[in-house]
Length: 101
Image 1 (tube, one colour):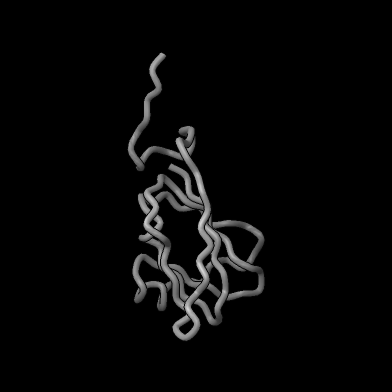
Image 2: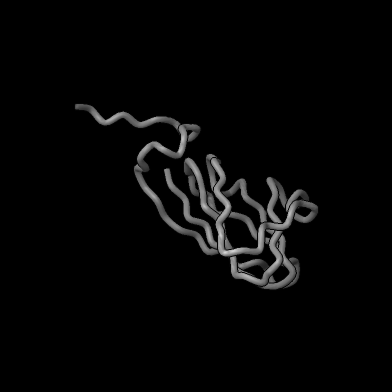
C-alpha cells in the first residue's frame, strides 16, 4: 500500500507527516509578534493564563483583533504557514504554537 499525502487544506483527521513547536515572545516596545516561516496544515495556539493576547492575519488586524480566550483551552486554526499568524499583547508575553503538517 502506498502512502498518500494531501495538501495543507485537508481536515485535521488526516495523520500528520511532521509536527513541531514555536515560542513567540512579543517584542519589548510594541508587544507584537509573528509566527516563523513554517509550512503546516493546522496549529494549536495557547499562552499564559491571565495575559491579554490578540490575534489577527496582519499586524494591524492583530492590534484591532479579538482577544484570545483567557482559559486553559487552546485555539485550533487550519492554516498553511505559521507566518500568517500575528499577535499583539500588553507585555513581553510568550505565545506557544504547536504546528503539524
